[in-house]
Image 1: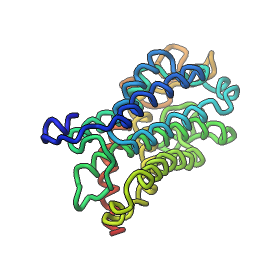
Image 2 (image 1 turned 90 degrees about the horizontal axis):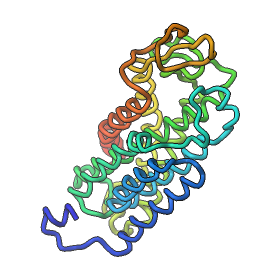
Image 3 (image 1 turned 90 degrees about the vertical axis):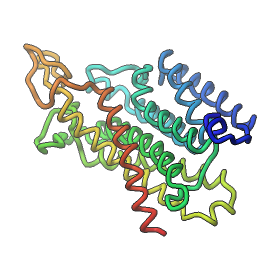
Length: 304
C-alpha cells in the first residue's frame, strides 16, 4: 500500500489480512447496530476506522475491539439508573458518526501514518532501533487507552460513586453529578482499568502474532501494559481538565439536572461555552496520542 509505493517494497498485503480488515469491521458494526451501541452513521464511520486500524496492525484492531466491546458493556451497565441521572441519555448509548470519529478518529490518523512508515504489519516496540514505528504504534495505543479509560471513568464512576459528590478537577470543590470536569476517586481507578484492558489486548496480540525470534532480539514488551494503565488515567484527567475549563456546565433549576448551555433558569457551575463533549473527546485523544510515546520511551529506557 502506501509503504510499498513510497519505498518500492514489493511485498504485498496478504489475502488473510485483507479478509480480516474487511470482514471484521463489518461484523462488529453489524453487531453494534443490533445491540444499539451504534446508529447507522456510527456504523459507517466505524467501518472506516476499523478498516484502517485492522489492515495496518492487528494489535491496533484488538485494542479497538476491546475499547468498543467493553465500552459498550459499561455504557449499558445500570442503564435505568443512568437514565435518571442524565438529561441527554440515549438508549444503549448509541454512538453516531461524530462520536465514533471523535473517539477513534485520531487513532485512525496515526494508523494511516503508521502504514506510510511501516506498511501493513506488526512490529516490536523498540525505540532504540525502530523509533518511528514504535512512536506511531504507541500513539495509537495511547489514544485508544485514553478513550476507553474516560468511558470507564464516566460510565462506571457514576454508578459506583452514586453516594459521593464529584469534585471539580480544577478547584476540588464539590459539584453536582454530571458536571463536566467532575471527578471521583473510584472513577479515576476505573479509568486505569479501561486503559489497562486496551494495553493488555495490544500486548497479548503482539506476543501471539510476532515470531519468538523477533521478540527475543528486541526489548521486553510488557511495558505496553503500563502504558495502557497510565494513558487510561492520564487521558481521563486531560479530558476532565478540558471539560472543566472549556466546556460549560450549569444547573437547570426546573429540570433539576446539569446542562451544557446557559439560560435564564440555569445557574453557572464552571467552564466556558467554547467546546462540546465531542470536541473535548477529540482533543484529549489527540493529546494522549502525542504524549504517550514520550512516556513509553522513558519506560522502555528504564526497562532496558
